[in-house]
Amino acid sequence: MDVGEGRMRMVEGPVVEAADPFDPESRTAELTRPGAVAVPPVRENDPVVPPQGAGLSGWLSRWRGVLRRCLVALLPIGLLAALPMHFFVGNVDDTVIAAPALFDLLGGFGLLLLPLMWLAYFAVSALPLVICLAGVVAVALAEGATGSLPRPRRVWRLVAYRLRPLWLWFAVFGLLTQALPLLLTADRLGPAVAAPLAAGLAALSTAVLTFTGVLGCVVLIERDRGRRRAQHLCSRARLGGLVAASLAVTVLPRLADAGWGALASTVVAVAAVLLWAIAALVTYAQARRAEGPVTSDSLLSELATSELD
Image (cartoon, rainbow, N blue to C red):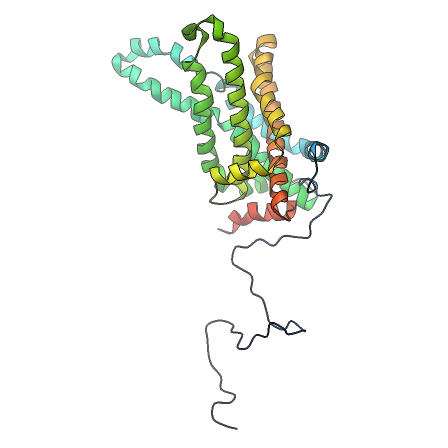
């Protein structure tokens, strides 16, 4: 045997010394990329992802299916969101009423606390949206991939690592939608603009909720992606169903409050936000399907990568 033949060389990892791309037996091994999520074969009857090219009927079918299968697991999530919804959402103007009391109690220093109160309201008022969207995403994807409802501990582990950035995004957009009604009022601008102003603010709130629904799914499922990714997905999805759900969140609680009081408004608001969260997930899944193969299993795999960190 000649010198140099049959020598053993020690290396730190596997080495393919002579890979033949035309090998008919495919004897060369392909190493998976770290962090890559394997996409299972596309199921046209996926319980969450509408088929490619499906219109409103396909979207509604998935939305109704998620609601029907996951309603039992979503009720505790709605109850958890009801407390901050009842005491904080829509009550930012209460801080203005509290200003004289703060002045009498602490003098000029008390007024300095008013901006902090506003920030606290904006932050806490975003909490119901965070709870409902995170809960819906975890429950619906786990149920769609496995066929059974996940336990509460499993739901928490799936979304806990992304709650803080999701909350920050929603608080920023909540600042926009709740601060403008305080600054732009019919008393300041005149009664002639009352109706157009109300319609404009409702349209702004609907648009923000539509975008933040997709953005929230991006933040939860796709790591290290945010606003630009959500803008791209919004351009690929049919947003009609999500727009209708966002309009319901904007209008129905106010109508319930005017007709039946604050408690009824809270119940209607929680129900509307849960339906909005389902609409956001199905719309996001539809946009992802327009980009390429995606299933409930692959979306759950992306969401579950946090558990390995």
